[in-house]
Image (tube, rainbow, N blue to C red):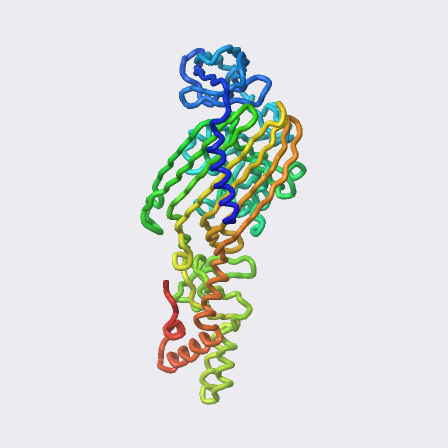
Amino acid sequence: MRKNYRLFALLVVNLFAIAGLAQSVTISGTVRNSLTKDPVPSVSVVIKGSSSGTFTNENGFFRLTAEKTPVVLVFTSVGYETQEVTTASATDLAVDFVPASSLGQEVVVSATRLPERILESPVSIERVGIATIRNSPAANYYDIVGTLKGVDVVASSLTFKTPTTRGFGGSGSTRVNQIVDGMDNQAPGLNFSVGSVIGLTELDVESMELLPGASSALYGPGGMNGTVLINSKSPFKYQGLSFQVKTGIMHTDSRERSTSPYYNWSLRWGQKVSVRFAFKIGGELIQAQDWLADDYRNYQRKGTTGAVAAGTRETDPMYDGVNVYGDETTNAAIPTFRSILGTLGGAAPFLRDYVNSLVPSISETMKISRTGYTEAQVTNPNTINFKLSGALHYKLTKNIEAILAGHMGSGNTVYTGSDRYSLRELKMAQYKLELRADKWYVRGYTTQENAGQSHNLTVTTQLFNEAWKPSSTWYQEYTLAYLNAKMGGSAEMDAHNIARSRADQGRPVP
């Protein structure tokens, strides 16, 4: 992974060196509404007969380069009539854009893998365009998917969110494909998509398309309930340097932790070096204090299911907190308290009669749980997500384009599935080489993952308990202390609490 970063840095240096070599004609202008005379943002401006173009900014201004003049510029946008303007010079243009009387002209590719208008699509498609992404108050572009019709989002942490459709909601869903620029962003070691932890930076997202329902025929077996396609911006159309900063406040109620800031820095640079060659690079950094799970209710497990039950650590020797780890009592290796007492009575004849008098009053299924640790004690909630991306675009012919692209991401997050997982120093990268034309493409890509220090909170804490004091020793000390307390006249729960305090001596506390 370190070698990949070095190669990427070397590539960026070379791009800076060649960025100013080409000579071309620069055409600029402003697009405004023909009725209101207000500037129109996000208008696609393309040189007719080519894929070279750009988009207007929030002031309706655009700038692009052409190999020569005259050229015909094609202006398109949702809600407006397509307009062609011929220019023979590089002077500033003033284009009056005529509003259209009908919608549904957005172009999508998710239904058939070929560009088509959304009204012509044979299936229902939800689309999020660049204007929606820019104007949305969401902390991250991935959050916008949750506002679409028929979509549920399971939030395991700030940066790990799983969209689902048509039921079957769950964290890390394997029923919805997530395709980023034609690459499935599943983590090989986890077997599910990791959301926006890896992928495009927010400034490089052109559109998102959601195809609800079964889409396995087009996008693989993971699309039983739908597919999310995220498409990036072309450096031929989106040029220049962009920088964005988002800030916010986390934990405003200060319930599980104190109020803290949220930061999101994003950078993108796209450059058209010549009529044939363009490149882009981008980076994004998210930093915040994530929320902590603090449900300490007692959970009575029954195989893979269970239910919340009465009791706390002080009132139930079998206490198993929902967000307390290492205290699980369903482990088959944990003996019942009856069997522990019986073994001790057999080994100590002078205690046999007293132990035998206690056994009938103890449930046959009762197990004493080890003392666990809360989530705040075993995981670091400091969320850091860093993403780096880049691409080289070269036009072999007028309609055939070669693309070499890479996306890298690293960071810390938390995932909730059948258990609670801490993804620490997770690193993941995707690289692709693609040859693309109007109606066909050839694509090859690779996904590489390094789990870093990621771990299962429950299993890791159980192993930690065994490391500082094996259960064989812990239960022996517990039982002896319990018997001593009972013989001293202590009540049942008082005896259990005294025994736990004795067995936990030397227990590390963060």
